[in-house]
Structure formats: structure tokens, C-alpha cells
Image (cartoon, rainbow, N blue to C red; front, top):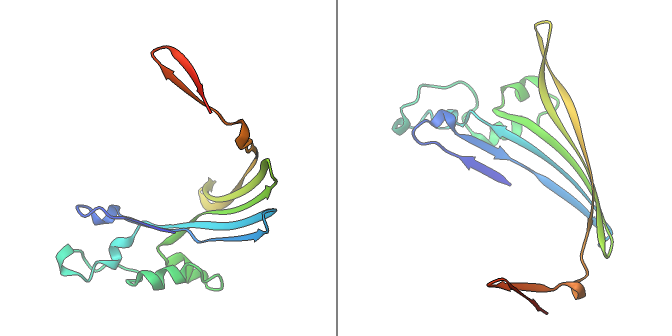
Length: 155
């Protein structure tokens, strides 16, 4: 999925988010999902050649598709650093589906900027979630109507 947020008064406050997602499903038994989130907060440089916006010549890639592709150049560190798309999170989700309940575990890894003795670096911090959710039996579902202080059970 993608999300573009544009501020036409202040183009430098616009952003473009990209979240690819892939799910492997094993016949109503197990789902494995991998996704990542990258955000680009410098999309103004894609519009610097358009005279209507009146922007100066901004450094960096002016084609958003090429810029997005460069963010995945794992073999070229300089290309990744110059890309406007920055990694915000990696997510690994495993869902075990049973008839009455789901068991879900999710691992999210986020880069966090750290500063130790004047040296800045990114540290990847993991977050783990474990959840069991029960699916109510449809035959037991009821509806209660409340009208002027009286309760009525409706099937």
C-alpha cells in the first residue's frame, strides 16, 4: 500500500509512505506475513523542476520510482543513504487459525537513532506481541435492545 500526504502551501511538509506486504497462507491453518514500512519526507525534490511551485533546484533523485528502487539497493550503501525513502519498521507476523480461536505472534523491528559519546548510530529495537483471540460461536450471539429503561432480548 502507498500513502501520499501533500501540503500544497508548504510542499516540504509532504510525505510518501510505501508498505509492501506478502502473506503465505497454508489452507486455513497458518498465515505468515512479512511487511515493511518506508517513509519519504523529502518528496518536494520531485517537484523542483515544475515552475508552478517555485522551488529551487533540490539535490537528490527527481524520479520517485528510481528513488524507491535505490532504497532497496542493499549492495550499495551510498545509494540507500541518498534515497529519500527511510526504513521505519520490519514486521513478521505468524497467525495460527483454528476453528474457535486465533493465535497470533508478531515481531516488529524498528531502527532507533542512538547517541553515545557524540557518535550517532542506528540500533534495531525489537517489539514482540503475542495474542490469543477467541471467535465467538455464532449460535450464541444475541442482540439486546434497550428502550426507555427496558431490556429486550432479540434473537
